[in-house]
Length: 165
Image 1 (cartoon, rainbow, N blue to C red):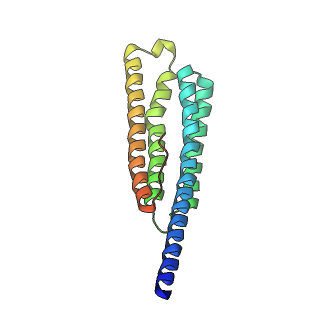
Image 2 (spheres, helix red, strand yellow; image 1 turned 45 degrees about the vertical axis):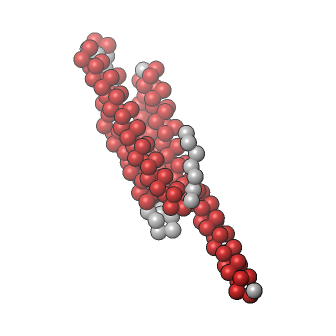
Image 3 (cartoon, rainbow, N blue to C red; image 1 turned 135 degrees about the horizontal axis):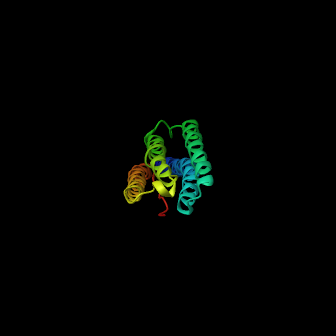
């Protein structure tokens, strides 16, 4: 009887520690997602300015976005790995660095195109602007898909269920 009681107590401790680990993993994920959301809010602001073709706010939104990317990468580095597991940490860094590549590449080109005077905004420039917009959309979708897969793997490993957005 004593062995059964000890086994039951050991099982209860293991079960409690697993739940605690899952909760910690979920909180860790949330802290990384906050950094992604911080960048995405600035990205949305830039998109809004681009859609309005408001060149004053475009430049401001672009600079804010670049700053948020730097801040978020630093914050992710401060958060670090989860119990020596760097999988979600690396995935988040790759995601934010991917945003940085899109911001410094296609977004910068789109801003240059939109900022052209009307006399220089030819049909070929307009076509290029549409192509660049597609590059941005496809790039962001690829980044999010890649991150989501790595996040799901992390979730399975630590028994965390993520909300669908």
